[in-house]
Image (cartoon, rainbow, N blue to C red; front, side, top):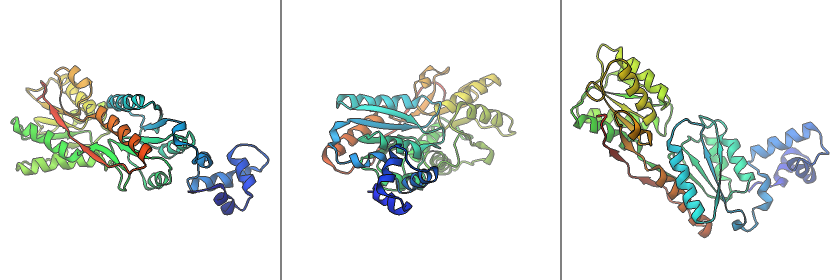
Length: 328
């Protein structure tokens, strides 16, 4: 693991000076401070490194990093995490990494400095720099509702399979002209797999996918509004919409009804997530359900097991299901 000696070697300053910089004790130039801090970031050094040998049970804190996203399912993830943590006498601290995870690396560094014993990262893509940063941590990390291209353990559903089942559900209910609303096409974790599942279901049933029936977005309510306006203005309108989140589904439904369409008589809609708003919608929203509480709970269960035993954490794909209501 990186040490202050490594930083001293990289920068050509003494170990004592490195220590003063990292502990904000003064007695050095601005140029030296920048040199030391840049080196520390480069090798993923954290100020608590010298405390790594302390008894691990002393802190009993689990960290959670989430995006700043206006969606309801994060509440269920947090509830699952906090429930299991509390049962095992752990506390949870939460920080937000921006809507697109732009501050994720800084948040990971913050959690390391706070000496958390484990870290959960929820629903964010990890770039190579963050993956390398995580590999250098001295505590276990679990991804929830996301995954990485490395061996970092994760807990999530199979998004492609869930999207396939959602589209197939619409087809089984007599719909053939089906659009998809709201996927982020640059999102390799949730956006593209849901589009792939949608396309595969349509192809398996010999149905045509019109290019304009795939309307990208950001999984948001506004994405549903924009998608529905676009669908309504088509010469060949779809008769059903697979919305890639419940928020997007509500945007689609509200806009459709404002445009004079009836749901589900004129347009069927299925959502994705099965958040609490699904049953509150009018009509109540049929949706693919992700077990968010279970995801959070399992993440902490596995993490505490790893903390106590030192064993590796196994990734797990959880089951999804479709909750049938009145929007299809």
